[in-house]
Structure formats: C-alpha cells, structure tokens
Image 1 (tube, helix red, strand yellow):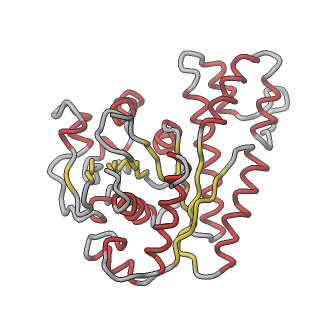
Image 2: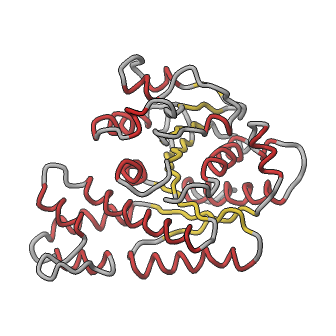
Image 3: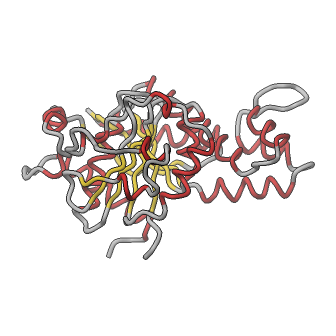
Length: 305
C-alpha cells in the first residue's frame, strides 16, 4: 500500500472557513474515488467533526496521546462523507491545547501508517509553533485566506513562521543553528533579513552543508493557496498578488490552486453537518471544489488522464 498524501491546512486567521474547506475538499476527492482521512489538529477548539456529520466523537487525539489507545486507527470514526474517516481533536481537553514536542511527533510519525489516499490535517488558528509545527511537518501544505487585508497579513505571517519552524526542525540537537534560524536576523546588526534567500546567503560561509539541507527542504515543501469566500474578480486577483509577494519576500513558491465563491447556502450545509459538495443540486461552489480537487490531484499525483 502506498503512503498517503498528507496535507496540512492552515492560514493563521480564524473565521476564514478553513474547516469547511477541509471537509468539502476531502469530500470532493472521495467523489473521484479516493479514500480520505481527516485529522482535526485544532487541539484547543476542535470542530471539524461537526462539518462531517459526527455530533460527538467517542474518542480522539487526547485518548491516543494519553495512551488509552495504542494506534491512531483505534480512535478513527466514520463520517457522513463516504469512504472517509476522522480522528477528532480535543475541544474540551485543555492539556492537549499546547502539546509538547514528543506528543506532536507521535502524531506526525504515525499518520503515514493510516489507510488513506489523502489525509487532511486541519490546523488551529494562529501562527505559534504549536500550529506551524504541524504545517511544517508534511510535504504539502494549503494556506487558506479570504482575500481581506487582515487575512492576507495573517496568512503571510503563518507562512513565514511555518517556514522558519520547518527549517528549525531539520537541526534537532544543533541549538546554535536553531537559534540562528529562529532569529532570522544578522547576528552582527541584529536586523531581520527581508528574504529567506538573504538569510541563507548569510549562512553559507560558516554552514555551507547546512544551507544545502535547508534549500532541499524549501524546494521539497509544496505550499498551496486557496482563496475562500470570493465575491468578485478582484478577490480572485488577490491570490496571484499574494503568491507574488510570498515569492519576493520569503523566496518560496506558493502555488495558487483555486478559489471558492461566497455562497449563503454553505451556512445551511454546516447546520446540516454535511459537506455541500455531497448535495444533489448543481452549484457554483461545487464547481469550485471540483476544480480545486482536480488541481490538487495533478500536483500530488500527476496529470489526470
């Protein structure tokens, strides 16, 4: 059995429809014949289960972390999306809201053992290391923004912090290099570098091999962008401009894979606890998820024939 494609989904800002995007994108992939797994890694305010028709999961990540269950499979439950499963987070388990490194690593290391073609890891709001560690841990990451200035600013900060955390994770046991990466600044002037490339250039003289490791990780990490709640053509253009800004200042590629139109009927689908792509009516929003899922398949598994 091939390892699943694991994709983390974040954005920094709360209220941008991230869990709705996660639920519907996974459902769209199941309609294309894929088995999908969902992990709710919003460890302080989990709600993905409500988007998937699971009123109250009998077990979740807290039970796995505590050792009550030995395998992640044991806490997975079926959802309203055919051919899918969910490992819920812990909205009422405060101790898990700030997991330590070993707890996060336990989850990360065991995800690839799960039976699925795709696994979506729905992250919490914010850009602290509890969130960005999960974003940085997997080869694919989707950033969700709604096109408003606050959302774009938060998405940029999220991407920057996620990139720094990813580089830091490469050098466990090397506190000096980790400290240099975390500072993202010139140790002589104390000024922050404007781009990742400038930062790497500053380290080449003393850490040439380490810089090559960082460049390999940066090249391998696939950062993807979805713009949500689009109302007009100007909102769509935000995606392209944002990708250009990220390339200029962070020196990383951000692949724009599509947008989702604003649709009042989404609220009703949330009340019904069922992804809107599973409804029978043909709608623009279903077309959006169909296009995004096709782009995602092409990026992760090659062109669709």
